[in-house]
Image (cartoon, rainbow, N blue to C red):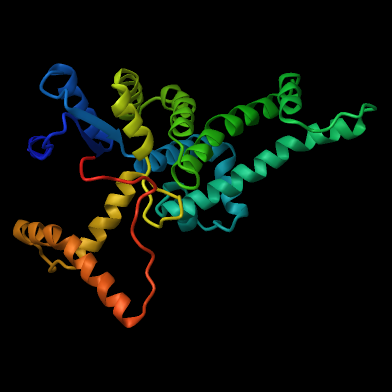
Length: 295
């Protein structure tokens, strides 16, 4: 099996990481629960990219009839086909773009009454985060309370999760945003896999040796541009698979896949040499952390 192959390639290492999503994660985790000694070497990593996609889909479906669908119409998704496209989230990049626009707009709308209150008051108070939180706690309008709970709860958590995996990779922020967003998984019927994943992953993280936990912090997101920006390992893996697929025939066999995967690094090296000789600039492939052979 794949797990046996991973274990056989550990070498001197006593543990190994495996990044998977959804049902596969749940099945392997249950195997680890049933036979913990056999899988004591394995660390399961949540596929962060797919977690983001499914989290955004959950939030979109939950709020679609409340405000999400109507705002999508205002953004130009007016026809029946475009509404279906927006609701399904067929294009993740466009879906996240819509999400960011809605999130930014609601943040500004929530701030408007707070800023007006300060302007109308006789005090010399200035806007602040703590002041905004105190203002929210005094509100009685049910619509305003609901929007603060949605926007400053799961929507803000998803926004911070995106930031923690892309713009400024920080494991602590990633875990905190996931923990806050998990309340939505547990509040809505269905989605048993992600409810299980949240509980298992938090327990696994809390029980890890300090050395393993430090590794997880450093490599929960990986970059290739050298700019310090990263992306979840599963999305990075999908990019590598796309590069490998370019070298495959139309109906590849298992042998074709093995040959293409084994040759991927050599092909990448040849490509860099050719680019350099013909004078084409290419951003070097490197990670946000220095990955040694031992790791």
